[in-house]
Image 1: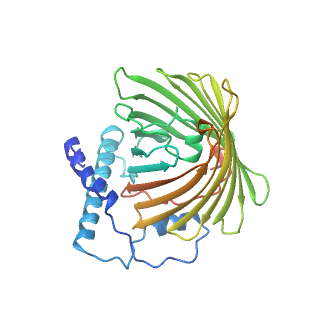
Image 2 (image 1 turned 135 degrees about the vertical axis):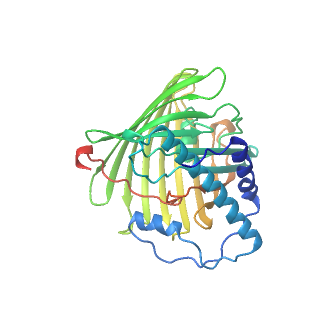
Image 3 (image 1 turned 60 degrees about the vertical axis):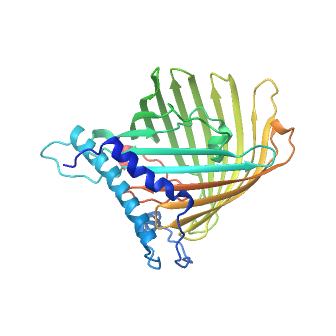
Amino acid sequence: MKSLIPFKTLQKQLYLPICLLSIIPSTSQAEQNTIAKSSSTQAVNEQSVDTDEQHTPFADWVDESHKSLTETIHNIGEYLDESLAKDEDESDLVNRSYLRIRNRSIYSYRGKLDNEFKVYFKLDLPHVKRDWKLIIDSEPSDFDSLESKQRGITTGSKNTSGDTVGAFRLQDAHFGNWHSDFDIGIKLKLPLDPFTKVRLTRVDPISENWTSQIEQQFFYYHSKGLGSLSKLSGYYALNPEESKIFKTTTSAQYLKEDDKWELLQQFELFHRYNDKILFEYSTGVSADTGENKEITNYWVSASWNKRIYKHWLYLGVRPQLEFPREYNYHPNPGVMIELEMFFSKNRKIDRLGRYIPKPTIPESQD
């Protein structure tokens, strides 16, 4: 059994990979020209090692730093799983714990430069019955604006100190044709802030190319009260390989502390150019039911996302044009740059994957 890594050691291990955010080199492998239709094949391809990389001392140091932290994450997950849930007569199971480090920077003409740094840690406990998972999130997004959630954008500088949450998640439970996740945990600050969340989803085929997805979330924090998010999405495959997907989303969010509904309509086009590059295009409109009952924003954006180093480092660039209410609907061009790093020994990472969800079937038919 592995020994638990001290917290100070984990801090030191984190320092080196974080330093790579501004100086990591990209690979020189030629872009692949085709995409496998099977999502499992795509995930395996993401894990393959680029054969044309130059093995310089700096590249070796980068690889060793990544490997060291990856082993630390794996050892923590394996130790806790074996300590908490494994019986002596049970065989070993694959542990898929992982760490994601993400940095977003956004600049707009009428706004300012905003920056968001987020760490997400998922601890896998494969020996725990009924798929309970331990989730550590440095910045939960439950009470973010609906537009921020749906567009995946940074809406302003945030102080994440004390906002980390820890929760146990019961995932993959079924209620008929509904799939559910249930979280119960606590926000790690004083005074402690307990919370609970439930997410229900259902996926149904409409026609040969159209698929619908219904999602309903409810969340409750002791400090902020109740919130809900309702979402109806439609997916359309533009080609047999499903490398080009059109998506339309209608969503509504209610937060008790704001006492108003936020509404959003968005249209998106995903183009998986090859195993290293993804293009995304988005346009939409948002509104709320506050005192003004007005449109809050119009936007159009395009993004270029690339796997820039092996299977664990990704870069995204998103230019966008908005017409927000806070600037009297005057045009506000801007750009967002996102850098993500993943650390996992056994989990197959496909950060660029955009797939049409599979129809939900009852648990007895899985």
